[in-house]
Length: 98
Ligand code: SF4
Picture 1: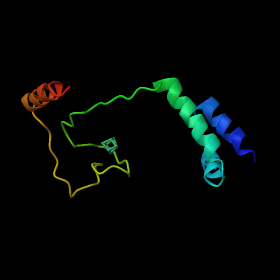
Picture 2: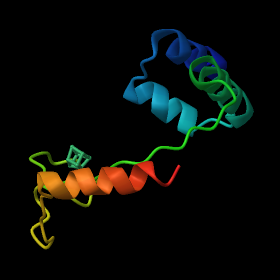
Picture 3: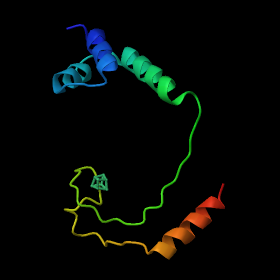
Picture 4: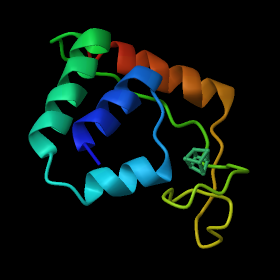
């Protein structure tokens, strides 16, 4: 299988099957893969660097994303939920950090 065609198909469709991913991982086509990934980055983000921050006003979640430390199955976590005045105070502090 021509791995470049697999990568091109993913670029066009913005979608990869498990077989596509396995094929790429088993190939030695990193240069082409990284080139295409860089083209997509340039298309959507350009060459600028954006910094952003979030105010994590709660660590309660009802989802089970396996990679996430705050998923609902993690019962060893101390859960918190900030009050509105705490969130506003935090946002004010963040706005002064620019
Ligand atoms: S990534 Fe974590 S916080 Fe986000 S939805 Fe999944 S479990 Fe919840």
